[in-house]
Amino acid sequence: PKVLETRVENGELKMLVHERPGTTLKVASTSDFTQWTMVSTNSGGPAIRTVSAPIAEGGSFKFYRVINDTVYGNQVVGN
Image (cartoon, rainbow, N blue to C red):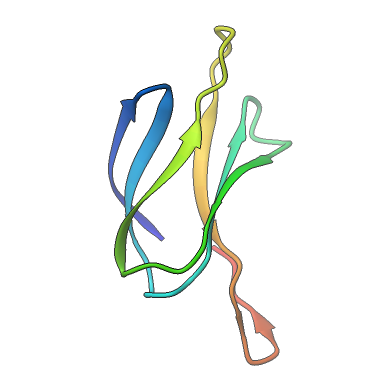
């Protein structure tokens, strides 16, 4: 998926993303780029859509990524 825009609204990170219509997108967060934690899942939807993730309180920096792990045939396509 391609992230087109990001913003913070009401304690959530909102990302406008572009991906194939109908795919399931997951948002993961990390503070060290080693261990990633899934924080939300967005099922289906149009090609351009907003996905959200809660922002953890506490002051530590977090990094976020959007992934697609849709299966096409017998092949898992992950990015």
